[in-house]
Image 1 (cartoon, rainbow, N blue to C red):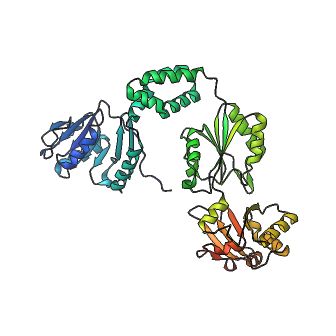
Image 2: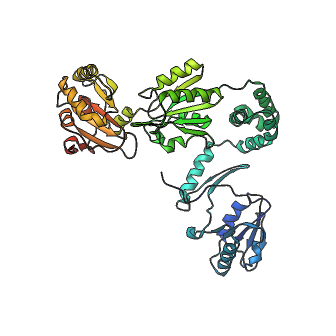
Image 3: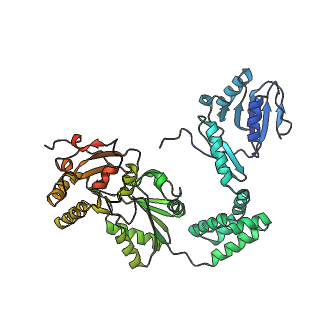
Length: 463
């Protein structure tokens, strides 16, 4: 994900002036935007060419003078002649934010495409690179918004003083969440009795006992933020605390509320900053403090996510919890490579297993299952892939059985390897960095492995 060159914000202009230097169509377009604010809008130009008669602006029909910027919050220059140059110099000398129309390199700020539902405003900016795209995004968002959203926001603002005196922080936030998402409140606003409905809702929240905390065990998927479920996105926005693993990308964590506490529990191979017992205790402690906790796990929480241990701790402590499934890495790897892990007359089943810690009995069992056509998906086995392949062959898997490996499944930096069990067992492979899924079975050959590195060519010698 790229970085922004601008910082999005809402700039106060109440009681100040917005000065637009220029009298043509470009100036008129900026004036249409500026008059949506409570600022006094001033047009300065020797030649007033556009029709400003329908806008509440002050027209100054003369050459620009530096004193025109007295009390100005923002300056737009839509004149590229002498007046424009003078206005730019005056704005720079006074430190007033400046926008030079259609000259992005000279702008201190850009005018985004704006959705206005006062007091709600939504701005979509492309930093001047793609204004047409910004307008299309605006149109899509407009279609999603209720026409009453501004009135509901104003109602929430009117309730602030009363709510602050009756509900503490977290409970107040939950009241506001209920207020702004309730169809009944929106209908009341439309009827003109929104304040009465908001007061009734507040009384109901005041009468409730302090809400107990709860924990959501949420699957973050393999790492691509667009593979997160809608339910996961919604709950991340509701969570007070996000407890997440190393493999969960920042882009997914950032989908949570900006003011939510974030705790990295840091379990990864060779680096355990938190033990599982400490994570269990942390979840219980946070929930007992009334927090809504999003326990964010890579993939699916119920597949090699140690969710069972966390659930047992929550049950023992009497803490409410819920599971939100995610796309497990094996399923993402199958999708990346179009590999049908179950295939009629070839593979009638699909087995999830972890290669680390597998004993001889487990290896014999896997070999027997693969030999009758089932597809294996081995997690956490990249560093021991060659010896595990050798043991499986010794336990009955044919060296010719296809093997496909996906590193960083579901992500933009994924990489693929393809070959046979014999080639994998033949020596260590120089895999790319990242977690890997190793597919074993006849059905693997039906996948699309054209972009894969052949296992026979991916070797390196271990000294």
